[in-house]
Image 1 (cartoon, one colour):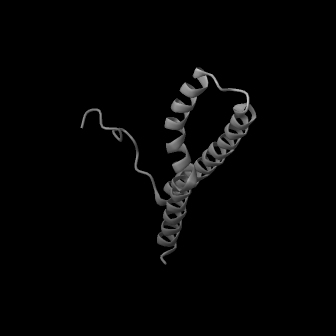
Image 2 (cartoon, helix red, strand yellow):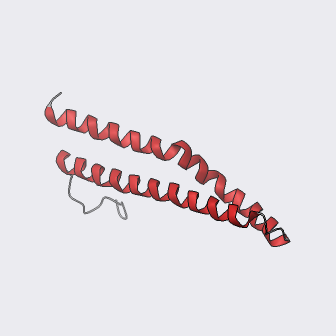
Image 3 (cartoon, rainbow, N blue to C red):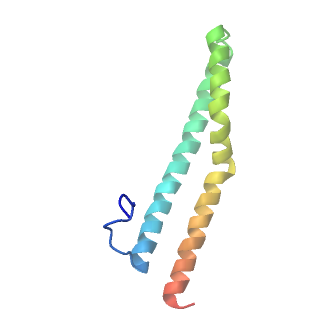
Length: 101
């Protein structure tokens, strides 16, 4: 099909697929660790200004921040680790398949 995303790509063998999955898992783990650390940093900074910042801009900031924060907290609180577990499982399944188990 014209414009198909896999057009012109060669098939990927099982070993290469496993390598790609492991690379992606490492990237996902680094991303999840980064998100967790940045959320900790942000909460620390918010705590530092909470006692002195009480103007209208702060209320607007809080309204917007809460809207953006909620999905990140949900992701960081479980979804990110769920994605890691799925990848660990798929890598294990692929390895067992390759070994004939």
